Length: 259
Image (tube, rainbow, N blue to C red):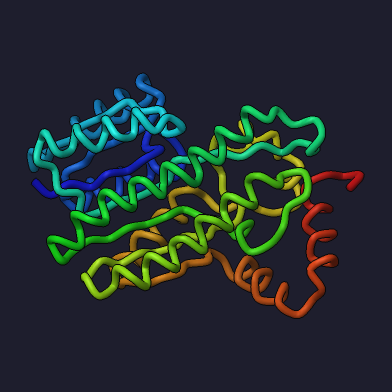
């Protein structure tokens, strides 16, 4: 059975992706650590499910490799072929480097990087065998520059950007297309969890629904990279013409008032 797997599906961007793929008559496997919100999303979609689509939910801590492996076995046991993989699970944390909770930072790298790598690898192999598939990996414009006071998040998004471009090149010969989504700030629970309200006061955020819609259309067109918003595109472009030290300083000023 063909199915769309969305990680981080219970809220924010993942939830918006779930609604979009549902409307396009895709069976869904919705993955998140938050069981209650997953069940609420499933209930909401079931009420609209006139086409008898499969809407399956799976509770998984994406920072735990054993749980990710069990998710993969779950797909195999049910003979799910993931033809659309959306890696939207992730989080950030704005904090001074010497004050940060190191365990939280390591967990961030596990979710933002390792979970995405694992799912791309195991699902990508099946896609290649079937000569079809689409992957959307959620990076950020943060992946194009260093980010003092949010260093781990910026580093993980740079990882996602480079990994996605690399595997996209390798997988295209198998008719598997990888889109790297690089939004700027958008409205979601991210701000509260990342303690990054200062940045959002300086930069007008997108709506998560709009970001998801743009990414969905870009994936359908087999695009490789999507930076959402004209200002964000300009920001990424002009960083090429300034010293990295200057870009780092400007980046820091968007994170913290006294940077």
